[in-house]
Image (cartoon, rainbow, N blue to C red; front, top):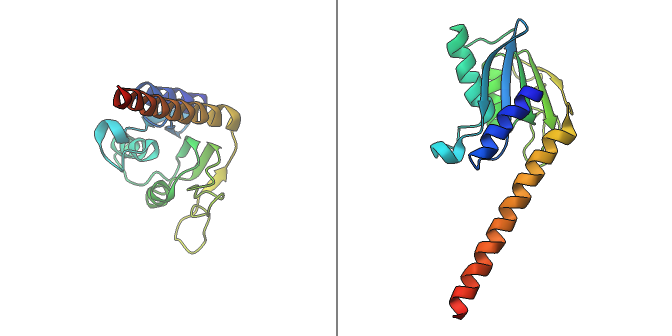
Length: 158
């Protein structure tokens, strides 16, 4: 999870929501990813999807049956769908996402037996550290927005 946090920091440096992911197979990291939605102006540029795409290229297969995906935030519905479609064996995540988490918090797509594949899920790994980086990012974002609003109001008053 520490490596996933390093990926989250990479996203943060780009003013992206700081979420990082990596995929491990046979005790080796085969892929990494961090959010790039703003950078690429692409709604699907989530850390998990970028890592899955890289892992598929690295292994030469869309089936990641022996893979463990580590991610700093609980996967959203889109990422959970990609995780299921790529047959990832296990997902380990840090912070829970009460608004969109689909690994048990908001809903549980990853272990729903109505699908033809389910994942093992381990939650809350380094949750404080994973949550802290997200909280700090959104706090700073709100502060920047307030400062811009205040600056605009001052200019309008002149």
